[in-house]
Image (cartoon, rainbow, N blue to C red):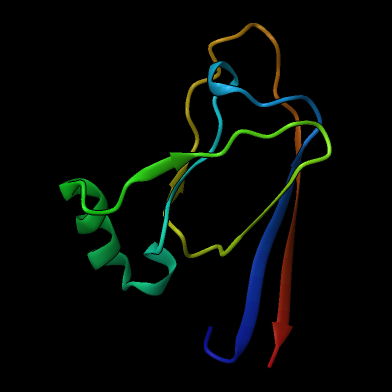
Length: 89
C-alpha cells in the first residue's frame, strides 16, 4: 500500500480497564516487515502495551502495528467505535 496514509481511529464507549480486555499494541512494529515484527514480539524485543481508555478517549494507530485483543474478564460488554482512514499521497 505504498503511497497511502492509513490510520485506524478507535474510541471506547465505556471505560476500558485491564479487566475489560484492552487492545495490546507492539510499539514500532508498523515500521518492520511483518515477519521481523512477529519475531521481535516473540523474542520479547518489542513489548506489547495495553491501551486503557476512558469514555471520550481516542486511540489513533497504524493498521500495520501488530496488535491483539485481550480477554474481557468482566460480565459487561466493551463496545468501541473504529474508523479506518485511507488517503492517497
